[in-house]
Image (cartoon, rainbow, N blue to C red; front, side, top):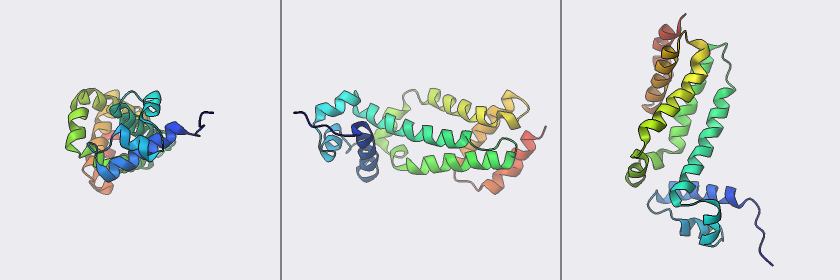
Length: 168
């Protein structure tokens, strides 16, 4: 009788995240993830077509959690909204810093990165649009939040500038 394993997909994603942090991108393999989960390599391929898809799915699922948290921020308090987005972006970047700074992963990520950056900016712009007077303003504020949060600038330094931009 076949062995029934609960939450295989989630176990694989959790193990991939853990191995990226411990070993880096190049040393995380389908075989190492499968072995750590007590599964055969073929089982992993039932869920993910490649190592890249496994890792991309883990990162994407983490991003969806952050995006959901950002959607819950109050739009009637501009500072709270912008600060919440800012810190969520920083937290996501810190969670994935090892992956984002890995030279082997960077080669993979560089393909199509401008399209992904545009998508990220548009997602953030949609969140800040209620406090901006135009779509251009929302795009500008979104890009500013992305850039400065990745530089780990102090939000209290950034906010007065953003406040001038969003004033209606």
